[in-house]
Length: 178
Image (tube, rainbow, N blue to C red; front, side):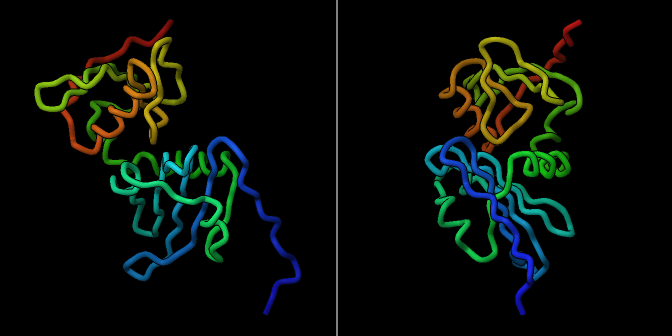
């Protein structure tokens, strides 16, 4: 039986991030919604699967190794494109469950630190909650709203990849601007 009212699809934009929502059961046969933020070249910036039992964030193999075809994804009957605002609203609801946040002394406060791999410093990092500006010379780390790296996109990508390796991060409080 078909519905007399068909939803109006949100088309994927030609540039900028694309947002795709997929409705499928998880491996435990419970309903799940997977949300994707897909950047240039099909690179997944953020991904989360939301289930009744909680959120599961993208495994490193999805975020680090491959790209996806957003146009092909939305052709699947269980998927649809949706807008940035809806993605960001849902992301804000579940981001507290992200394991990386447990590595901060207080994820609601601003922090600055040095991320190291073994004895080798990778980069200076800043954690700026609630959409604050990190200051000049800082680049947002892919997959995070609050994490920034001192330097350009290449440095931010190194930090991003290092976060999956459980690096050492020496944090100290960052004074709030008056």
